[in-house]
View 1 (cartoon, rainbow, N blue to C red):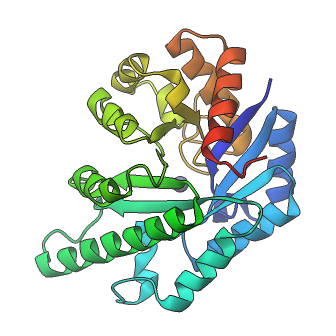
View 2 (view 1 turned 90 degrees about the horizontal axis):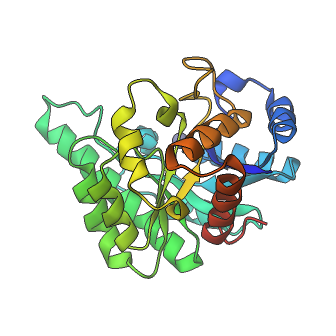
Length: 272
Ligand SMILES: [Zn+2]
């Protein structure tokens, strides 16, 4: 049996320089692929380095919406930033553009003008990266959080329907939301949240959805599944999320592991 962790942040400060150990422990737990997701210029470079260093590590490169203060007020990615992203995206071990998307969760709500400027910047950068993904025929890993992001995300994605496939990472939405994603040709990915005591509603939702449209991920170092709740999460733990989710869906862990790896290989075409 093998599992893939389709979304991790191996360069996170919490991991220090333990990357080799993380990869080793993941392999020992039968986690045979880790897709590490960059979020800005520096972490995209690190992501590529780890992908080059470790055979089981693959890269996703992108600019996350919550890191755009690094653009120092620019309303979109510069030509140089886009050129570097493209070069990284063309790397043989880069399997996706991610993590990208929209996040209105922590906007300065009382400053209407600034809030609007941040939203415009996020939407521009998101669109620029979707265009790159479509051009290079790479899938996208989408982060979408906060009021209004679902609607805005779908509006930006809609013109790309049929030209682009995306995964909505860390899915915690409703059945209706998931079905909308599926209709547009996208899939969802589930983190350790599904194991949390308070996540009964999410478990109920997932029971209603087709398991072949799901992947599993850690989003490590965040969101450790039970029995590691509130501890530092690492790629090896995806096994716990996968096994628990299999139980929720009423299929064996072996069958679900096989299915999610198949889905991941089909989704990330360059994931060998
Ligand atoms: Zn993430």
